[in-house]
Amino acid sequence: MTVRSRVLVLVAAVAVLAAVGLAAVLHASARAERRDHTRAGGPRVTPGTVTLSGPGRLVFRNMAWGPHRDELTAVPAAEPGGPRTAAGLKCLRFHAAAGTGVCLQAVHGPVSDTYRALVLDARLHIVDRYDVPGIPSRARTSPTGHFVSWTAFVGGDSYAGTDFSTRAAIVDTRTGRLIPSLESFRIVRDGRTYRAADANFWGVTFAADDRTFYATLATGGHTYLVRGDLRDRTVTTLHGNVECPSLSPDGTRIAYKKRVPGLPADAPWRLYVLDLRTMRETPLAEPRSVDDQALWRDTRTLVYALPGDYGADLYEVPADGSGRPRRIAASAVSPAYLG
Image (cartoon, rainbow, N blue to C red; front, side):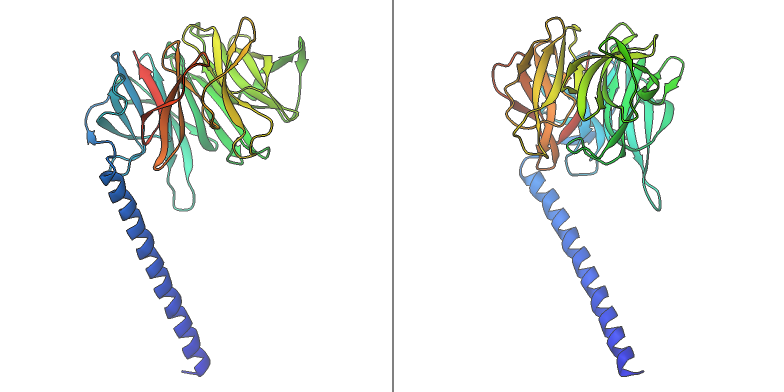
């Protein structure tokens, strides 16, 4: 063996040892992180039966370290930080209402991941499945359970910048009929049909009439709240600078995240509530940037996720601008209140 060959063999051996050492360090670090989480009093999670029927329950994606990480888990709504029952079903995003759920999943492949949406019945059985064209970001079920929606990133992976593209889909759960993109709907702006190649939609939220929905439209460097009509297949602009709307249970207000000038480019949002009758905006008492589609716990309180030590934590804040935010559950995201 030549000197050059010996050197190459030595270099290769050193590289292999370095890779093994790095893998060992990362594995030990992950184990230490999980151990520290347990010592810090992380939530207790045990396997069991989870259903989407019956009042007084809160279901969400569990992000606590352990064998049930990323599974749907249930707790009493009055004790959101209490012990969790894990369903055995993993979801990236989730929502449910009236005994119907939507679960957005990653399907891990040998080269890259793909994504799908599962429509679930009250016992978490799969009723239908649909391909999702990108990374899931939002999910909603209508109050009647007759419609579900999801949003996926099909270009880029963050709402903070401008170089992203999304696709919002809606499914009629009674027929299985899929509307793959709201871009097929006619846009009405200022009373006229509006056409633009850069139109983007995300963050659907449904009214209780099985016809009306709200969403975000982005075009020309601006975002708008739009009201959609499933029968007429139209969306009409209502208000500017609205992202990820969430309709209140009484149908009178929209909670949303609003870009506020002067904030960092990667954390530009504050939570607001819009009165749909007066179009008056109310800033909420959460001072941090919220990149989430807030959920109405009831007509007085909003729940949303913020980054935490182990993924995300759930917080609540009054919807009238009073009070202050309060953490209600650690290591949790994508909540749905059942009842």
